[in-house]
Amino acid sequence: MKVLVIGATGELGREVASILWERPGVQVRAFVRRPLTAESPPVDEVVTGDLRDRDSLRNACAGMRTMFLVSSPTQDQVELETNAIEAAEAAGVERIVKVSNIPLPGLDTGLHGNHRAVERRLAASRCRSTIVQPSFFSSVLDKQGDVVARGAVVLPTGPGKIAWIDPFDIAAVAAEALVRFDLDGPLHLTGPDALDGDEVAARLGVKRIDLPLDKWRATVVASGLDPWLADSSVHLFEAVARGALAQTTDTVESVLGRPPRRVFER
Ligand SMILES: NC(=O)c1ccc[n+]([C@@H]2O[C@H](COP(=O)([O-])OP(=O)(O)OC[C@H]3O[C@@H](n4cnc5c(N)ncnc54)[C@H](OP(=O)(O)O)[C@@H]3O)[C@@H](O)[C@H]2O)c1
Image 1 (tube, rainbow, N blue to C red):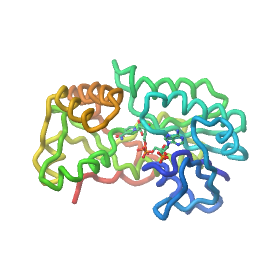
Image 2 (cartoon, helix red, strand yellow; image 1 turned 180 degrees about the vertical axis):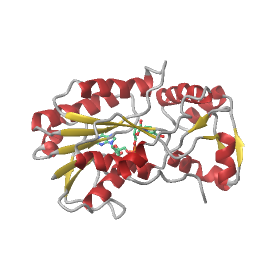
Image 3 (cartoon, rainbow, N blue to C red; image 1 turned 120 degrees about the vertical axis):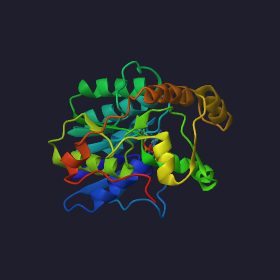
């Protein structure tokens, strides 16, 4: 069967493409906006394009049975992902597996509002869909590599626990949904345990810094983060502090037949 992987240069798409490429009987077509490099996953075919360019999406979807849909957390994410959904519908793609996030009561604007809007669009689509709703990726702390190397980690989440997940597990579940056809979701994905900021810092062997959110926002915006994404993150961290992402699920194990990977262990 033929699978289109959008975002094949990204963290999840790269893993999804690699996992599927090794599966007998699966052909992987990558949709990318820049040339693949030595670090790129092995694929059978590459289509160059952009989620803003509907013609390129039409080319990419032709002849595909399923589509992996992920894109960056930007303000125009609904428009970009809707372009991909429309192209898939026109090409007769059977199933779309979309990376979303965990719905949280009261968070219906910004990044969360965008994911809910794409989920509603998929619910109304003639393509079947699997919505993958992961908790925080443990890899978000990789961006703090320099800070961690200096003995600290910034986690402005108060006492809240997060059921952090290894992104490889998200990709492995998404890859199953792309070829198995019995995973209709939504699939709420978490790691094996929920950790507060102090527990994460302890696993990393560093000191935890819990900044007030206004100070955190000012710092990340000064370093170049889109203010829209900074605001979405502030709302998310407030929800985390209230315990909104502390719930673990057994979804990874029920799909993959093995427990989710442990995180932040060195
Ligand atoms: N981080 C978390 O803790 C977390 C938790 C829950 C959900 N999520 C969701 O996960 C998603 C991000 O996943 P990820 O980490 O795999 O993202 P990523 O590494 O940033 O990859 C995004 C991919 O989308 C591609 N892309 C972006 N805009 C495009 C465009 N206009 N045309 C074609 N391709 C485009 C990127 O291509 P280029 O390489 O060319 O940029 C890249 O391949 C977001 O929707 C986010 O909300 C994240």
